[in-house]
Image (cartoon, rainbow, N blue to C red; front, side):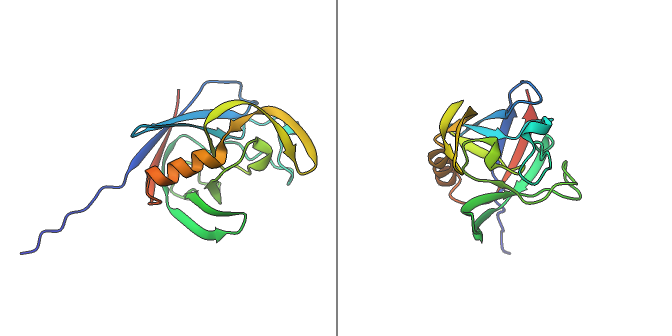
Length: 161
């Protein structure tokens, strides 16, 4: 007789703050002593905020998603998480959603960016001076999340406030 113990997958809850549907979407994650914010593209982006590919790439639908750890899979984001979307998920028409560091929505194509604080962030991006709502400390927040989750897969539950 052999007893097998199955460890359940860690669940992390992300609660989206209320806000203007055309403004960047801000959420909160409070997990096991870790408190970070998450930036996503607007719920309903205005045409001026469409991504460089001409598409809106709004934030993904609330619901439950599997989030595997990836390393050296995405050249621009070698250490990140991949939010599994597509058929059978709350966002069946989406793909390639990552959880990676970024400061502004212009750096996201539907992805999620952790940060230490949601605020107006000022800096330079691709030759332009930017001053807009985003997240600060994104690389540090991603590092804290990676360390807290031990770079292991997890389940993400997204809820609207």
